[in-house]
Image 1 (tube, rainbow, N blue to C red):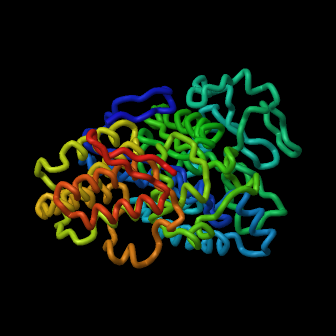
Image 2 (cartoon, rainbow, N blue to C red):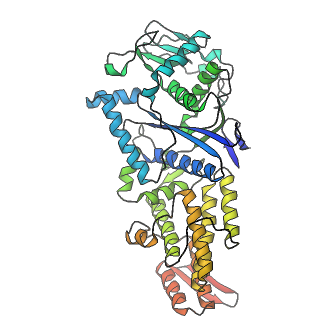
Length: 470
């Protein structure tokens, strides 16, 4: 398996630090509002990554944190006149509901920042002691960027260049405008129960130190994979590396994996731009499996452009899978026969190439095409084997696990106004050719009629069937 490592800026062979054991930490959600589609992309991407790592036989420990104390959380709590812990509990519950709707498996460990305050204070104290951090008169504690020679190695930013445009906010007593907060002194405008006693003054942790502590407390000073959204590369993940390695004097994470953003009209979806769609708003129109498919239809490091058409196409694709599974007596498992072997190999090769889900899905549809041909030809045993393969590979992606009749009857897939892609037309033409060979002329005529309804004209000739759009 090869993964693209943001740290080295290239694909690398994946070799765990400790034999068959894999330890992965992913930066989770800051819970002050409903999750949006950008969050869903991260959740689905690393759910699939975890699934594939386990499929390969690795003993994975997957940690995904919850940030439940942060500037945005406390600001929102004050705006709503609501205790901040009540606010976070409410949105944690909503987040779990969204995850369940998207088929997201819970991580092995889901630490909350407020549960690790003592460990955060211990790490900060060690950084002050070794000269990597300093406390100032107002209770703040800052990490000294100039003390860490490797600063910028993840993002590629040069520390000297960061001085350009850097500034010190009102009330900050930094020695260097590049320095970042490890601890924030108590602010009277914030809820009093969000502040904790510390040797350098009452206050609360900074965002960056939270993830350093939650990751190393659960996985050790060095671990295999650190993941998150691409927008976290700088400053969040860069700062994590600096403070973690300065505290432990060990290499922090070996592989850094980052998913790209969801875009609307090619502009990044975010709360700050007010161009985001919450997961639950989208789930009012599309079921969770459709949304999940949409998010996997693009490789995790490539931006996704949100559109209604793309979601409808995802539903149409799922409908094709479930239609192929209708009236087939399969047994769930991992088929070992040669039937569909090429497609299964193609699927594995795609997933081993930095989790290339679009190519893996193409392999899955190779099986769908073969299954439709086998059904038409009355090859029941072959059809059962192919269906079992579709189910087995679909399970690794978190799709195609429902009963086909229930999925189709629910009306949750593929609105009827969705046009067919070229690949979908090719599949139907191949199925029609197989039906004609099997002298199933009723099915052949049915396919011709279906294609005609979609604006596709068939032209039968000596060299085979050609098609064109009206």
